[in-house]
Image (cartoon, rainbow, N blue to C red; front, side):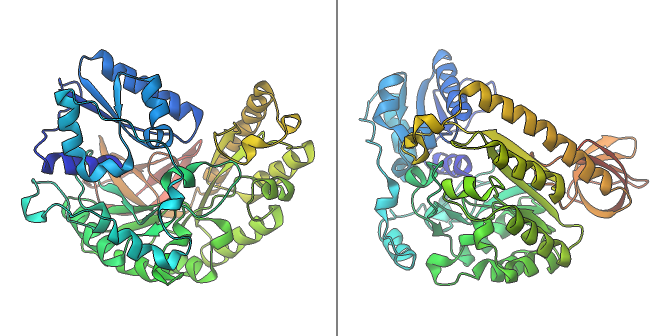
Length: 454
């Protein structure tokens, strides 16, 4: 999403975007700063870009989070802040001309907006610079949409993310995201509907709503139930066949939201629930809600309304102080919950977080964390494969994404989000095209993937 906004701003500012493998005067690397592996990948990309002979600029979470520190470590790159996005074309003009600007000093972006969610919209609007006139935008650039302004799709396909909010107000002890992404701010419904219509005009058939915490949508607009209102409006967008919602906080999932997601035609009964663990004591140290019993009850409520609903989640193992009993609780939950997709991650200290300051005596060594990741990743694969096997015989709606040939198509059922949750091979006796939504019966499972016949 951020990359597509940057691409649109650059195009509007007179820059020409080059394709993969083509020579460029400046390479702009949108970095990630969430986990160590992503940080290292971002640094490798910056070094590789510098080796190409082009001028290099770093944007994104890693650049924002470390600012001058990253600039000192990587003098090859100009380090830019989120605050540079509105003038990104001018910033790259400086990079190309060799005008070195001082990197920003990293700060806690939660301090930039009022603590009270209700006061944030006015404060944020007051700080927004004039947007680009949409009448001057190049072909393929999306409509102005409030503070985010413009968008240019960088990849095709029938699915696209739609950002509904940015930032996070939660204070999970292991997570640094709120400090460098800032406080939670919702985008207004008219902006979302306008962008959804533009995406549909670009051939998009499925929207994936994204944010750091989708269940908080609307709280700064004075309506905690706004997502329940917006979802039915989004699926009315001409050309849009399906809407998925990502990243729901279990503590904030309301009965009304479950009902809308489980029963509204066009809204996928897909519940991306951020559990993170199943042991109550570990979750308390994480500063999070819940335990195995509460999470099981939540999933049961979902399946009472939609028995075939998809449920996915991520889990952290190796958290400081995690005991054998804690692991047993997690094992029981994974074995009983019948999740469709499971991500297992190992704990590591993140700069500036509460957990990084925990007593070293409670922290596990890297080898033990890796062992636990391996053990639970194996269990997760078994659980996902069993859940997929349970779906044999079900009728699913498959969104066609690619034509394989000989009556075979690659797509996804409603419980499969893009890139992370497996896919469905569709067998059909009639010609289909990407974007078609086809009812099919599941006839086979292969790991977490399905085979279905139209």
